[in-house]
Image (tube, rainbow, N blue to C red; front, side, top):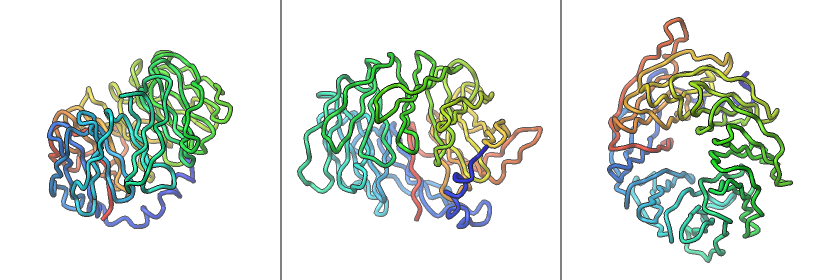
Length: 367
């Protein structure tokens, strides 16, 4: 069942909601890889207000307060965007293509970028021009990274099938913890004590004890996990991947599988609303989005969403789900209040917003 702590987390947003269908006073910044730009979508008018030119095709976005950072692997760079002025203010050059970037906890002026070239490691980036420490080397090229919620700590999934923990304040990585090749997405549990590692090849979810740097629990899965989503309070996690048209539900604090629930065809990326507690699951091959009730753990609605839906975001007021359609180049908008669970299991599509060529990521900012 959905936790009370999850609902309380969103209470300020829920109290501030306007009338149904009135829109959200803010903007969605949509990274379009095909046009090397950000589309600025007005979420009150539901249209593209303007476009921000980038230095190259963006791969993903990172937000730090009112600044956005677009990763530009083809240019070995990260573009910095002022979301209030809605313009690119700086391009940070790197020695290699960035795979991921995060801010150092407690700092608004230092980022750490994960690179595989010229050498695998985390590279510091000072936004204020201050002197930075040396890069922190990794034992092998990385596939991706996860970041602890409260501590200056990252975890890198290596191509060799190992996980390497990296405390930024110690300026060196710990010895790798060896699992198996074919690692997927990782997430720290919300208390930071365990790291959840999706192992695609072995079809399991492995929990690593962060302090001891050893395997704590291994959970067999009916799928090869590829997509990983954790609700904001950390009480439930959801996995999708090849093997079954289903969503696997995990209780991170119990370190156990709750159940495997049927979803749409080839379910992909996910995002959750708070009230009602719905999980939105993209189905790229079916060009649809499945709406999964977290409380009852059943699919309550399905809606068409453009061609090859991928990333999903929920507006902070919990009124709308925004779905990026990578092939049709638009944003599908689902009004959450209009979803009416019933026998038909259909959810109406509120509107479609043309965004640009190959939208790959988005961030929603109020104001």
